[in-house]
Length: 97
Image (cartoon, rainbow, N blue to C red; front, top):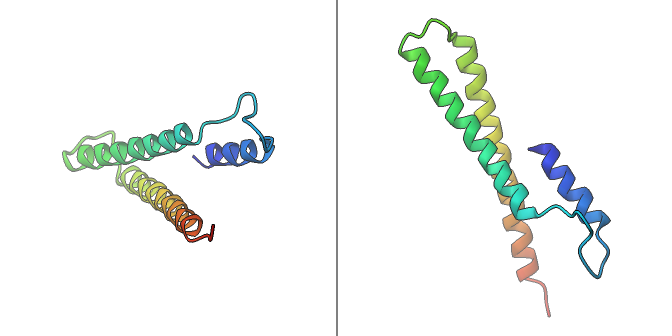
């Protein structure tokens, strides 16, 4: 997810002022991909926790805890991205014409 956000930042910096660059990255697609990845991480962590609580022998407590922490961190990261987007939107809306 971080690599995708960096790619968007680099593409935004390389875009000429008058138009879109060839091969430019669509921000909406990158954001959707990041949200999908967070969702996959959370679903996987829930599945691992469910398997552990059902007594599956191939799932260890360490795997459950690591997957839950990964899901938590990815969710916190996407919340911070959302907060930055909302803040930027509010700043733009408060600019004088």
